Length: 409
Image 1 (cartoon, rainbow, N blue to C red):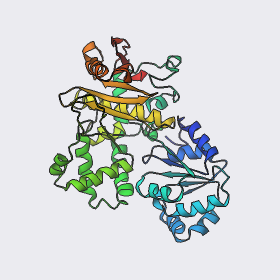
Image 2 (cartoon, rainbow, N blue to C red):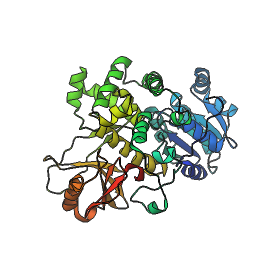
Image 3 (spheres, helix red, strand yellow):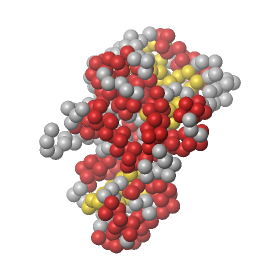
Image 4 (cartoon, rainbow, N blue to C red):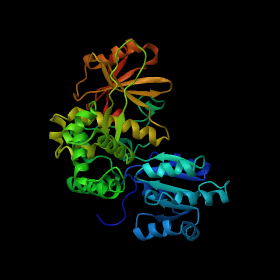
């Protein structure tokens, strides 16, 4: 496909516009290739200059003479990939403070948070709005970026078409990175392999906790095999032949580069012994499928990871929708030592929304047993929950739960 790529409308657009009118600087974080540069250029190319700090010569100029660099490239300015020159942010602060009342002076992007957030905390606190742009949600893929989540006001006004199951699983393998939707004929296996290689060489290599990239890639694949499961660090380190502290440091690298979410359990005093071990989820289901060797939709749907893949997609949709609205997702899971569990608990409007994910397209009341048990334990703290499934049935499954097609989430 030649020529300019079609722009895909993002939910975050009004949020970042508003932030640019209220703060001197805006920092847009998110994984590599999630569309940060495209979004910033689409919204601000007419009002702001643009510089990427990724090319080595530009980076050298920015770090060698930061004040001179900012004189050549004055605000209003888009500074792309600031993780390559985090110390430049101290001089960005100087430039901002010369005209402290002006908003939208600098629009910054970064693909990893470790060094950048340290610099932001030290130099730009109170001057910067921090927003996150993840890969495309299903809403954005289907042209309905503003569709609310199922429990939010306005849900009934948005009509969303069912997703045929075969199409749903093809979408799982594709994942949410914008280029794969702007160029649907791209070879998925080749694209994801290239993405992982680029991620390892450009993001991971720059971080001090990682020495051997080959070992780190093996860690990446073994972690993918444990996706959506309780994360036993000791067991993982033993299987890798690495120290537990190394595994913990590498996991923090994946979090800082927006590749995984470590989901914490929900704690409350209900007289039950609760599991305290976290779970880990890859943030993009296409990356997960690639790392676990899944190549065709039928294998993905019917294989041993089918449930975990759908669970990952549900979590990603919730997180991306909330982040796209400028909110920080508050999602936990619930599990007791005697086996009662609910996949996700979403805090919204002062309530807990329980969500179970089931691979069967034919929902039944038994699928809601975890939600009903939770409602009995937590009482009024729990709102009506949902059993999310890949079919098209939407019906009550008991006093506290409804079946919900993934397309209607």
